[in-house]
Image (cartoon, rainbow over all chains, first blue to last red; front, side):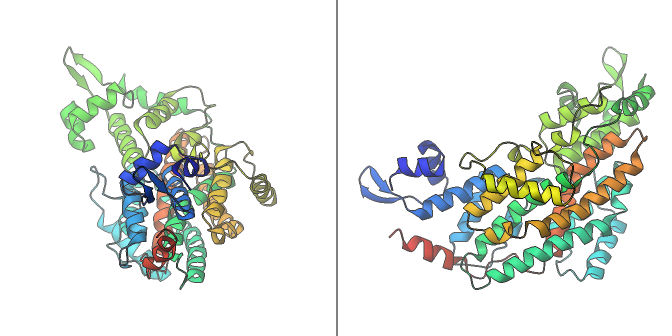
Length: 217
Length: 217
């Protein structure tokens, strides 16, 4: 198909398609003349993957470039999941030096649950970081329920593993892994929101402020 | 305390503090002279909340402005959780018009599980959007396990509700709600990553591409 058709089917402008090609997200079409290129169903599929990771997964163009490069690369040793992990989770908060007790707490959690991920994995660092931040914000109630949240997360992970296990030997496994990691978090987050009984509105935030600002005046 | 002290304790530069004040994220200090302001522990706390939502929660400055404005407002009728929901989840993908069967599927899921969130909630729209996108990407395996993922999400939500229930009448509930929604997703996502047994590396992504590009050449 021509770029106009790809644009129609993919639901993105031709300018955007050319931008993705320039950025290395989308392979260029097969040139049929000096100013004509042909695109295939693979381009349509790749375009959909890009939009899903961008619009739903909230990934950056550069993260997506790394991911599709890995998907297209013959080397399978790169950690695709780490690429899906978003920037905010990358480094520790400037205000926080990890509390050794928190690190120990997470290490024993992973040990008790038989989780194989190493203590130097980005996920491990993120868990420690969130727990320390919750305590710093006086939200210990959440940190105290770590094992219960871990149980819920483990159930979701078990489903992921079953699905990806079923993909083994399937050429599409690499993409399933990326999509599952990126869209799975969005799905779980939205389902968790739907499942909450409590309303999202605050009874009287004024109480908070009155209490706080009181100290200032 | 003076701004230099607030900067030291909060772990952010004075320039950043002034930026947050200009942007309406942080209340200004109490002026003690024409060029001197005093800050309180409330400023330290608010600064930590801003950093947590920004660095860990991945929220934008403007989302955080809306949130802290709501936290400081006497009107409690605003949906704080909706404010925490990130942009990517806001609107439907350009490429996708929601499939009525998917909407029906999600409606029956919420009905069966006794979830009270309305069908016009952003979370409902996000679930529909993710399911349609998964099918469009040929990842039906994930969409087919919707109820299992819902079970895992419901467990996490039950913990949230217990914690927020314990906060009722507590002036800090509004902030707990925001922190729980923003950091809870990050925590669950990281725990889910830790809990996975499957490695994040692809056996041979080359297979994917060989199969795909083959059609182009």
